[in-house]
Length: 173
Image (cartoon, rainbow, N blue to C red; front, side):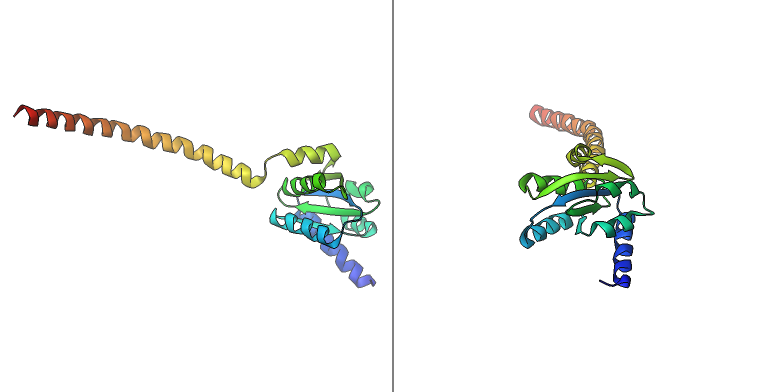
């Protein structure tokens, strides 16, 4: 890899870091191509990215970003999970690491706040942004449905009273 390719790779990785709200650093040892492709596919489905990179290049790419303090985590066979959603990368990597002992979570950062392994695992247990949105929409729709039922109830009762009176008058005649 020549200098211009390295510079381009560093710039691309740095823009990925800047566009992310969460970065998860993991060690991956002995992953097969199939396992790596499977993990990348799961990360993509979750709206996250997964990149195996040289530590030197990752450290250079971290400079000037809010994730600069992650530099000490880049030792050994390192891979990086990134996502704009604060939970997506952590949730996907932690779930994958539970079923595959070749991936180990080292730590990470959420909006520049450094997280240890336990912090990343706690972040992974939180609902994703989409799940939170769904819950919020459900909460907002519930009162509206109740209001609609309450406003329709008196009209329904009046209609039933009128119908009962009409039936009563018809039976009396």
